[in-house]
Length: 420
Image (cartoon, rainbow, N blue to C red; front, side, top):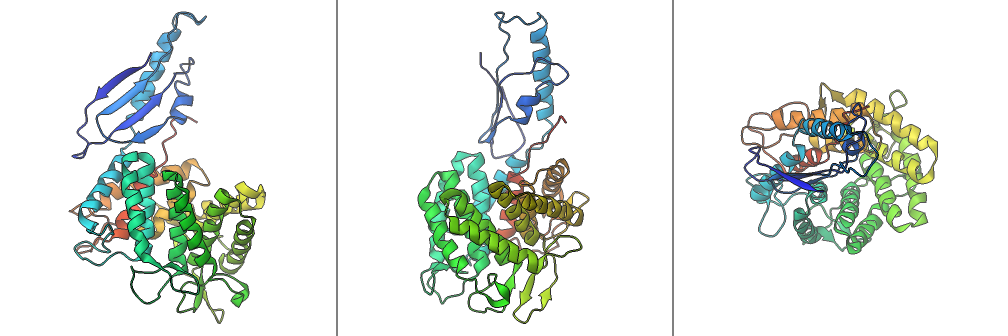
């Protein structure tokens, strides 16, 4: 028997919906709904809140007569625990709707900065794409906007040789392409192809990956440059994402060359940029060998993600050990008092990478960061600042990339585990 309970909410002006499916409570009243709580399905849409549940109280079973009471107690406890979860996804979708209203232009692109007409740089496009992917994964109503945005973003594609790729700004213009921008686009498009079930979008990602890999040569023993027209450095931010991009396409196409390329780039990046003292990653190396030892969280993030995926694909334990070591060290460095001590456009990728190397403390950290962002990380008008560890400064100018990063963080919060 399936019952429905409708519960009104006053959480927000924009209605949202959460469906929680609890199929059956375990008979053991000490464990309650362990299985259902840990594997429940959450889909965000529009309020009112609908709780669908199914409690088996069939008299045809040979259970003790009080068994149904234990099941009902378990269900009630599960419902009360679920109620403790903050509505992170609701907040994320509210902010996305706010961005749509204030940042979106009539041509389907988004503004770089609130109040300005200029279109976003391609880096921001990639982050916005990841935010829309997360939204559409939770609420199918956002799939239309995701598909529309991908179509609008094609104006960034610069067909000029030697290899076509996404430019920093929409066409027409002279060539100014970044290899890391294109790697972000590959990752976003691959995810979008999964969300939308559209292999043509995967084909677009594959073409962008061709551009990314064209940035590799044997200067400094290998690696991919940062910027096409000024080949002055090779950066972790252009190599770590490129490894992840190769792996993302490989997992869907099984092109053996891409796996080989990912392994090669991973080894080069690890050898060139990893700090042996803490396993985190420096920023870049100039062509004369000078290393910029600044540590941004996203540089380590993409290497965590890549190591975890390489371990999964190859079954080589060294990659899984790398991923766990880097994730633990990144947690120690950047997770401070429930915040990430870095800029949001970097920090959201660190939180994303932690989902590949699960731990209770990192999951808790993600939830704490999301809570802090919503409560303390916005200005008086509800716009996020550029940091994940301190409130926006007075007079700050809200940017698309900062809003999109925070939205992605809110929409990807891992569910709380109530039982060990």
